[in-house]
Image (tube, rainbow, N blue to C red; front, side):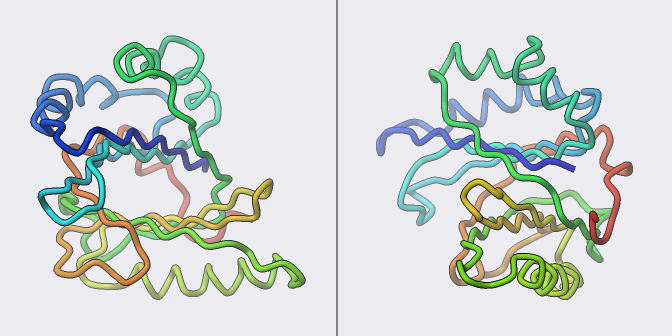
Length: 195
């Protein structure tokens, strides 16, 4: 599993209905994309308490071939580049994935938590502890699914969670609204620890 996200920060007075319309008209294009576990079409809005207006899709790839086809093979990223310029693409190697009690529901919210792996400690022990916490976190009643991934270049962990509903955003996490979920190979994402 591979995790990927790009975040497009928009002007403070940007009409976010433009992004909503984009997702309504184009979102289904990846509903059958080979190698894609899921793509969550995410936004944050200033008028709803976010510090920025942002379009920030998050992906979990079942196969790196699918990710490469999307980025380089004319599979969809060119539309982002054409419309918004070329954003940096963050990516992480997946280390764990859990299905939550609300897995059969349609997620309406998402959260992302990033944290550095502290220097001077064994990264394997640190990641193992985070995987135990992922299993506990993923058992919350409104959780659709949750993934843990790591960027070993910057030694950064990311935990991404989809929620059926989110009454309150956990402290230290970025909250998003989910406009659409493309999930053609979601069932193929292996659960549990990925090593």
